[in-house]
Image 1: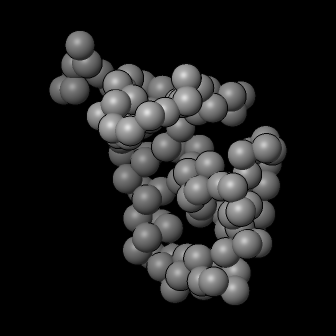
Image 2: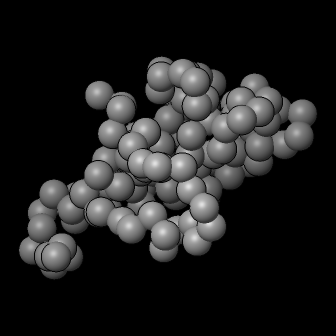
Length: 108
């Protein structure tokens, strides 16, 4: 069980994630909107990718290209996700490939 109150590493990861999230979705919102527009999205997310995994077939180096706040947010998300175990069915109730979240630990 996770000690949400006393786990310093978890608290720091949550604080960092919130700061990065606000960077993309608040302070840098106009730029984020531009990057997510139909005309720009293909430059930042591969056709088979998602916001959280923009380049499924590549490593993480490209995530911050011309959108540094997104790269920092994704790095922070993966660090936090490693600390908070999840049951995959809570996030995706339909059929899923085995080890769906394994890609999160490959950043090193």
